[in-house]
Length: 136
Image (cartoon, rainbow, N blue to C red; front, side):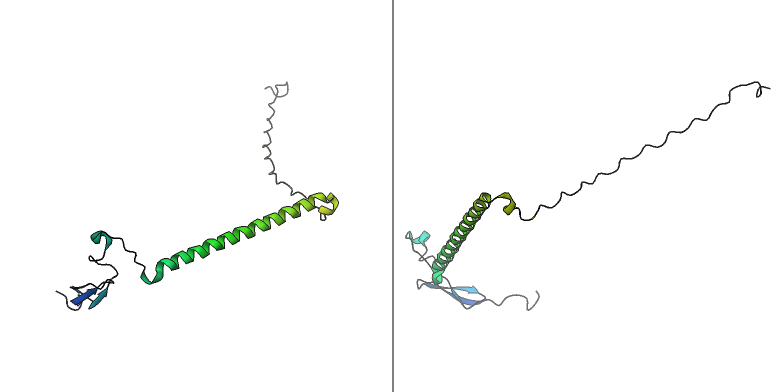
């Protein structure tokens, strides 16, 4: 066996939140747990609420504040939309000349690729016609 690679096991004492304790072997001398077999609801048949260090309260507080923040954001968005609609309605009442203070940009020219030109047709070579001069 290789040396100095295995953990050092010692006799450990497990202490529960209900006050119960028992011995076992572990790498630590003292282990603290919140629930053991003497106080667990499955073994006792009684329900017990365990809140370690107020974790449940912190969780609910965190999510309540987050949901309140999202509601505030939604209300702000609704106000902005309402203001935009009012401004658009006011703009619609004004004449076109005032509304269109700057002329719209000219339309962009469409790029049309030039059509390929057909190749010129080959010119036929004239065949000599028989005449009295070229007949032998």
